[in-house]
Length: 230
Image (cartoon, rainbow, N blue to C red; front, side, top):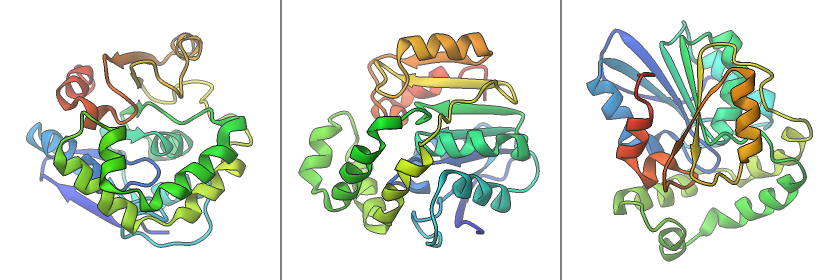
């Protein structure tokens, strides 16, 4: 599937941004312009079932294949968050970016996938007060974006998670130079798993005090943690 994309900037370097579940390209509202200011042409995708992209069959390899179908050439930088980090990891060898950044990646969900599927689907109609309560550090504009992306999201994507995570999605090695950026006390990557990733050749950094949506909890901290990678 050819995915819907949004571009920022006209630089001669390309950066690709891949959002997580329930979201779309709008989640990068501060990151994308910041990268454009650094000389990138930034391409944000809407994964299948999200934003303005098409609907259809959902699954880990399908999301990855869509990225390959949509994004041409070898970008200088590819950043994926959560589910987007999983899709990016499955596509990275074919996309061949110069550098990859995986933000609090959803690589190991396993036995929690069924519960996560139901929880995500029920969040489709979450009210503003609930979103604000879960994310007290977000700006008002981020809450507005969350409401808009939830409205555009197909909750059937959530029910693909048990099959998607029937196997481990943690990469055996970094195919390209790769940074794993973690939330403080990440619920998806334990300290032991972070140590294993470092042994496999990934650079691992944490954004102090940030939750799962690192770049919305602490935009400045997130950008600082990208030092040397952008």
